[in-house]
Image: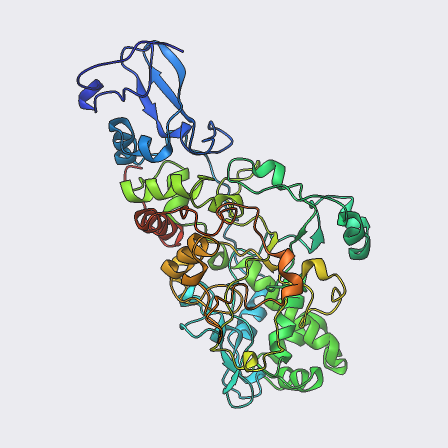
Length: 499
């Protein structure tokens, strides 16, 4: 470390060097790469230490300053970095190849958009998983309407079908070869006496080893394959309401693409209704895997990672706050770095959390005061009903295209990102801003989870490690900037020429 500091104008017309930093190089320039975590970057360790990479004619040095992040963000050198908006350490992302559809995927595409398979004859897979809305719900309803006359209310918010091609199977603990050879019961038993590591954006390697539920599809992880996932809404009385396997098979047999089944599976395929439906759903899964529209990786953030786009000052500040454990710490669960093979980040760690979002009075099922959606331990997943340590846990979704959504969390309680950010900010410090008051005037905190399961609620991971009456982790400006960063995760960005 050098004890000298620069005075006056900065190099090449830049700002005057920050007095908080020192640099032995006469023409040093501070790189953003040291401010946010990543495999090629130094970590930001909370609010007390800021590490900076200084590059100049005299070589590379690391400057260290024990100052609060908020103070550093208001400094001249930080202003310069935030204004630059470039990724100084671009990477090469490996995207899935865009190839012609297989015959199976072509069949799946037709099934995906076919409303005739539903009881009403009006609801297809695409009705709830709209291509125009990141394969999520096309409206701001907490849950979608289905059933024979499209008036039955669903029970959970519709998740996106995008970026599921790398979703691991459901398991307890790290995804590895050992877990693939043991049962869920054995995994649960192995996790009984283990303590959970705090999740932070600065130590994702340690938290990845947590013996906690992860993977699977749906909010409760009850399906492992896209083929199995496609069957549930097809037969659900709240969704497509196909009636039965036999009824759906009959519709497929007499549908406009019946000849494709014969070509792919032989003339006897329609003699076995279960096989017909199984193959149909496998075809839908192949369509979701083969169509790049389900996983394009074309957000502004993707191009920023590659050095082909610049983030605005607000977006850059939001990115830093996204990864700061003393602020939002979003990156603790929503991992934002490419994997070792160069595949783009999925913005999820695939793990389950009990966040205790408020009960949604807009849901018909909640009119019954004894009804509770407990995620992994029921009522729609039935194999882990006795594993009450997981009651209230729901899957962490990807944040990709999150800014296009109008409904959030498993029960659809929130309808914009501002409400979501407020929940994270105030749940524990100012619960009166989040939860309703009961007849006795008291705030009904955790009102959508029975009190016997409150111990499952996450009070460890930032910002949920704060206590009643303490200062909230984020300011209104922080929330605004984080939302601006989240908007960079929307697909369809076109980088400027020359990048």
